[in-house]
Amino acid sequence: MRADGLAGGEGGADRLGELIPAALRGMAAGVAERGGPVPAGGPAAVAAALAGEGGALPRHGVGAEAALEELSRLLAAGSADPADPACAAHLHCPPLAVSVAADVVASALNPSMDSWDQAPVASELEREFTTGIARLCYPDAAAPDAVVTTGGTESNLLGLLLARERDAHVRPVCGVNAHHSVARAAWLLGLPAPVVVACEGDRLLPAALAETLRDLGAPAVVVATAGTTNTGTIDPLPEIAEICRQAGARLHVDAAYGGMALCSTALRAQLAGLEQAGSVALDLHKFGWQPVAAGLFAAREAADLGALTVRAEYLNADDDTEAGLPDLLGRSIRTSRRPDAFRMAVTVRALGTDGLGALVEHCCDTAGEVAAVVDAHPGLRLWGAPELSTVVLRPVVAENLADAEADELVARVRRALLEAGTAVIGRAALPTGPGGAPQLWLKLTLLHPETTVEDYRPLLDRIAATAGAELVANRESPVAS
Image (cartoon, rainbow, N blue to C red):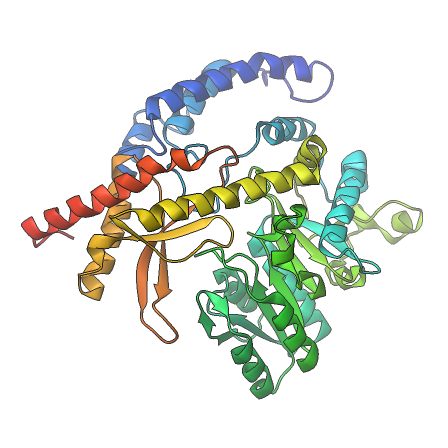
């Protein structure tokens, strides 16, 4: 059976031009079929819909156009759609069309970023783009550099790896608010479990950090957060950087969420102190509107990235690098990797850093307006003013319940909306105060660059109404879970 055409080479663009409309027809049909932010019915309904389409490995193919249209429809109908305002649970953005179009080109040409002879211009474009990102994070550093990663998890792993390469006995230190990937990175690298520092208002307490470093008795790498997953809060970076300087600790900032606020003149001051960190994690599939994956890792000193150096005769032989062929293998902990920098570079070329900054500002401004509506809503309670674009709230009807019953109600509200296919909202366990027991809250992570507060009013009303309905249903049926 013929392969049905290649995406690259002579005629490849023409064949893609024939096939892409079939994929887009299926996608449009699936979106219409879904009719909301997420398929209704939960996991069982989605599994049943897939089972009805036949096996995943048929012996006989149906042809390229039919396969594309059928499975694109199925994927769109069964996906959570971050382009719907009611899909606001996670740091999961609706990608810009220009980035997706660029991704098609990159996939068709398929540069493999592990050696220059597989990716001549893609490697040079990546170098220019990462150099610009490094300067964005470290405008005054002598020789900063950055590499492409799969996201914040890999970037945090690199942050701890570079610290370990400087001192094998380094001890990770982070706040209670730190991303789970910090502990996972320590485990993967054979480091001790992180020493966890107290937070207040989802923000690391500098005094608690200073005390921890005084008592640690070991070299430390401190991980601060610029945009927590739960609330979008930014740690006090200038104070943390000064404490690290005095204690001789290395500082890594997980700015996977908030880092691209550096593109905004209005928001950049919130990240003051980031430039004093030894390394920074960024992620453009949050504020950057890229398809997954789109991570970046910046280091203040390019020499630190020498820790990634590895030799493989067939990829970066010494005589090749001495003859001037760039060494791409030392630009990642991965070997084969996609040219993810291409679509990021296309997006920045299209919008400019000012344009990206304006989109970040829009999301943060919208979050502030949504928070004001929550604060005035008779059925909802606001956790606090958003620092980035996360709005944390709780149904008022949960306030007069015992703690466990209130948390159960909040969890049921989220699942009820998900099961109905009407909303995808997040959850966050947040302490009521220093040392207090955590309460379960709902959260909206607003990453849609075109919505307004009016797009979220129906969602807020739906959350309050669902909470009331769940409370009544639970009282009428005490055995309900």
